[in-house]
Length: 339
Ligand SMILES: *[C@@H]1O[C@H](CO)[C@@H](O)[C@H](O)[C@H]1NC(C)=O
Ligand SMILES: *[C@@H]1O[C@H](CO)[C@@H](O)[C@H](O)[C@H]1NC(C)=O
Ligand SMILES: *[C@@H]1O[C@H](CO)[C@@H](O)[C@H](O)[C@H]1NC(C)=O
Ligand SMILES: *[C@@H]1O[C@H](CO)[C@@H](O)[C@H](O)[C@H]1NC(C)=O
Image (cartoon, rainbow, N blue to C red; front, side, top):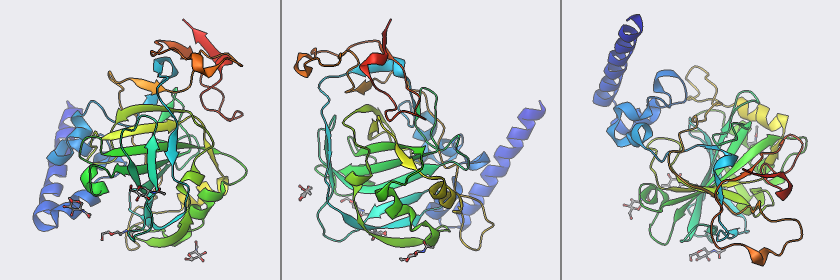
């Protein structure tokens, strides 16, 4: 009883707040300033008040998800993913929700993402960084229930069908996202360092800094293996337009780099200091979506790959390895268990 009354009270309070800010503020700005990752503006509430965001609440193909090794289907038709290797200039921005690196608007050659399950060419648009205030959480995707201290998401939009990222974000086959899980390590990744070197300049919301000569391909771990599924953007409006590609190896982030990230703030310089960290959405149900992978757990060492069977294997069980000591998060024919 008390609980119900309390939550009704909260709702009324919240609606009043929203109502007044929509009436007297600029509506678009208010909604963007409203959502965050904690409490009454947190992920549980994103879809409940703004009808444009109702996928966040009602959507059945949402992201992130837990990648359960038991649910993986091997698909021999999934080829390599290609990411152009040239360097681009752009800027890092503290959006108040995340740290992003955005490709510059000028006319230099696009970084294209193609191959794998993608039927179209996707043009790199931006990177988002999600991380925890402590090492035991931070990534959005989980593997076998395990979360990582951080996750980098590389977004591209379908440049064959759409003219920019914002248009593609709510259209069919609009977005491709490559997820890199970050593991704590001793040596810093050189491409990641190029980004993290600058974060002291973007402590507050709205701060930005130019970053030159970034290689998106250079940021990726050296692997041809991944898991793919159809999901959503992990921030409002949660559009279900994303082909996710989660790579099977982590890249390494140092304690110092995480420390620098944890000093960043959600608000403007004039606002009370509230750290930006813990900016991850909790995992959403998989529902009936297939989780496909090109990791062939049936292949024994030395087997000829051309013998791949034409159809997907069902119920290929295997273990998620101990990522603290091993390079691969998921792998190795030796770990296969058939049920
Ligand atoms: C690109 O242009 C848009 C719209 O003019 C602007 O908001 C954005 O900050 C620009 N991005 C970069 C990286 O310069
Ligand atoms: C990416 O695709 C665009 C559009 O086809 C093309 O102009 C550009 O040269 C491609 N980038 C590279 C590095 O090939
Ligand atoms: C994106 O493309 C659409 C459709 O061409 C256009 O209306 C819109 O202004 C563009 N948005 C940006 C940010 O360039
Ligand atoms: C801020 O950026 C400048 C160059 O843009 C760089 O020299 C400096 O090291 C950065 N400062 C911090 C605190 O990251």
